Amino acid sequence: MHPEILRTKNFVRDAVALIERAADTALSERGVFRIGLSGGSTPRPVYEALAKSRAAWNRWEFTFGDERCVPPEDPQSNYRMAREALLDAITIPQENILRMRGEEAPEEAAAHYEQALRERNASGYRHDLLLLGMGDDGHTASLFPGTTALGESQKWVAANFVPQLGVHRITLTFPLLNAARHVLFLVNTRGKERVLEEVLSGKSDYPCARVRPTAGNLTWLLAE
Ligand code: 6PG
Image (cartoon, rainbow, N blue to C red; front, side):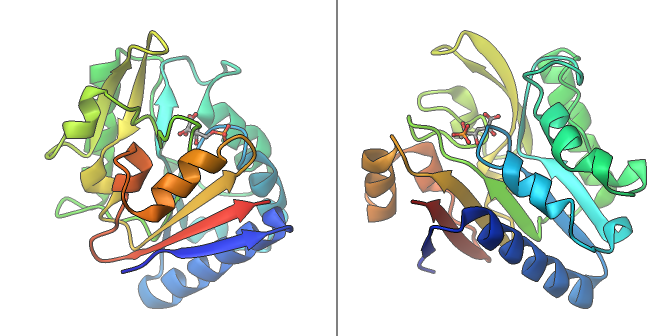
């Protein structure tokens, strides 16, 4: 299926509307809304605006696409960003938030996260909406060019060493990303125009170009 490409001058409003629409659909069809959060700087204002929604939060289930190997209170933690921008501002049972444990050894944290997802759905965890970002090197989640987790075909979650940054990360893998019912890339295009053009041409091999849900939709929301 071809991706839907939406260019907008009202990024936050449009992102929130897309998320709310996906939630309505999932809740009416399945009674639960499984949303994967991305890290980085782009989604923060979206999360802050989303926090003002009158949503049935107790039926939302939050996961994370990736995490830095730091404790949850560290300024680099994706969980911390999501907590400050969104999760602390809403009323939601703690068990509905599946956090990657960045404070553990990376392999252990990845295995724990996979186990937590399997406990929710052993036959195959599927996000109703998975938010992803794109780095200027074409990475998404913590799937960076040239790294081993790109080749993962079995595990849903992997520890990934990123030589270009000299750090370990915890990341969802392509099998899980591509199982989503809907993937929504949230991208500020400034400085990323060339990579984006190549990715959207469908002819590149950047990690984010390999996100193609097998039985789901793919949307790019681009802030201009
Ligand atoms: C992270 C990410 C990462 C991010 C991109 C884009 O933890 O850094 O999840 O994949 O989405 O690097 O980041 P920006 O939104 O900051 O450009």
